Length: 281
Image (cartoon, rainbow, N blue to C red; front, side):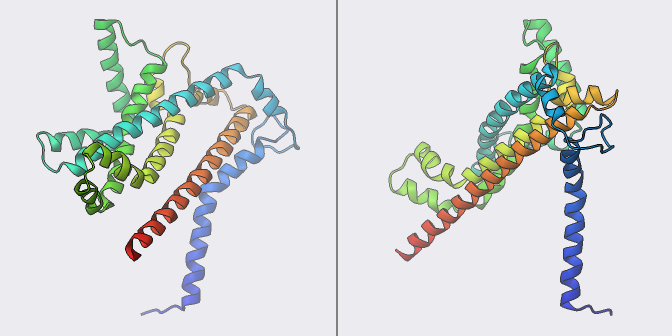
């Protein structure tokens, strides 16, 4: 049997880690770099310039799509976290109720179902509803409904995993001290799952912001999201201004992730300190 030294194992593992990070992040770094490229050809470097950012500021179609995508993503993330928390709470806290298996399957179905199938199904359903009631028309609201369906499934998984790790004795102790179920949820359970809620919000926001398939099925006149604008332009050759908007999104998302990671870590340290202080007392 071949034996290797610990130093070799550490070096080999670090090499694979570096290669993995390079595979994931070098394309993003190249995109950011070429957003400052003076050449109109996206992959030919000619010199440093900021003209593509100024061109982006005059690109009404792209800015309109970006603003629409940001609004839909924000409301999708908020709605997904609320509905996902309710669904996760029902699945974790109530082990037996009529239709639990069906409910669990329907919540998790969007995770394993192709988005093309989900988008087509929603399109057919919304068209049928519109014929009967005259509402809703295809646009931002229908895109939001589609993104909400997908985002709720992801949020449920994230929050459910956190709820399963909680110590039920803390909630039981609160009820023994006279707290009502609503007070237990808002004063005990909700603070303990706040990190999971933040993670679910960021995840669903990102999923909604860059979704193409559902948006393509559910969009209507005057409701073209940023991914659809980029996808339509990609057929004719990408303009370097697309690199500029992508760089701005990477910057905003990076700041959000760093801030959220800091808040989650600080909240976890505070929770550990409070638990240690309670144990000493």
